[in-house]
Image (cartoon, rainbow, N blue to C red; front, side, top):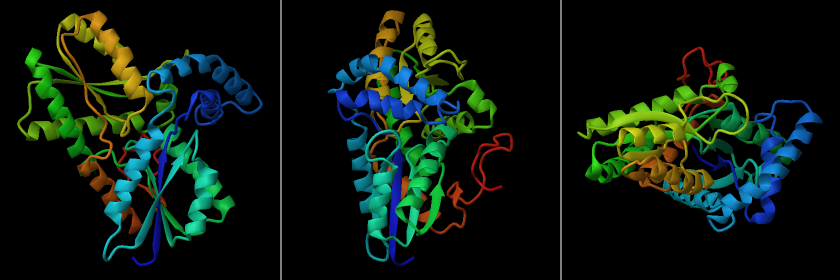
Length: 349
C-alpha cells in the first residue's frame, strides 16, 4: 500500500513516580472491564481500593527505582518496530504508544495520530493473548478517543497473536537458555507463568486462558523440535488479588510444590513481553523468596522477549498482514482461531 500508516501499540502503562501510584491505581479500578459495577458504586470502590493499595504499591515500585519501566520498554519496542516497517517500497509508518492507565493515554495518543494524518491505522496490543480485560478494554477506550480526535483513517486491529512464529522463537531461545542453566542442578520444571484472571471472566467466554495454553504448547513444541527435552512444563497464574476465585494453578503454589519435590525451576513470563513490576518485583524478588523458603534448589527467571529481533519481526509481520485484511478486529490471519465456546473472542467467525 502507498501513503501513510500509523501503528498504535497498546500496553498497560505504569506510574512514572511515587505521586502517580494512587491515580494510576484509580484509573485501573475505575475501568468497567476490571470492576463491572455501575457508577457511582464503581467510582467509590475504585477510590477506596486505590487509596488502600497505594502505600503497598509504592513499596513495590521502590524496589525498581520508584516507578514503572514499562514506558521506556515500550518506547524501545516501538522504535525497533518502526525501523522494521519503514524502508524502500513500504508505506511511511509511524508507531505510536497508547497506555491504558497512565500516560500517554488514549486521548493524547489519538491527537498525535490525527496530526500525522495517516491513511491507515493498525491497532496492535502488546498482549499476545486476547482478554476482554486487557486488549478489549484498550481497544474500546482507544476507539472512543479516536472518534473524538477526528481520526478517520481506515482502521484494522490485530487483536491477538498467541502463536506467532517470531514470538514463539524468541520465547524458545530464552527458555532454552534457562533450561540449560537449571540442568546444572537437576531436571528442571518450567513454569509458564501468566497474569491470572477471576474464573468468572473466563466463564463469560474470555479466551485468555485458552490462548495462554496455546502459547505455552507452541513454545514446548519448539523446544522439543530443537532436541531440548527432559523438563516438566506447567502453566500457572500469578498476581491474584481480592476475594474472587481465580484461575489456577497459582504460580506461588507451584513454586512451593517444586520445593517439596526438590526440583530446579525455570520461570517464564509467558504473557508479558516487557519488564515491569510483575516481573522485576513479583517474579524476581517476591517469588524468589518463596522459592528460597520452600527449598527450591535453583530458581531461574527467563527475561521477557522485549526487543528480541524475532519478536520484533513477529510484530512487523502482524502489522503487514493486518494491513491487508478486511476485518476490523481479528487475528492477523483473518480467521477466528478460538474454539466456539470462547464467545468473547472478537474475531469474526
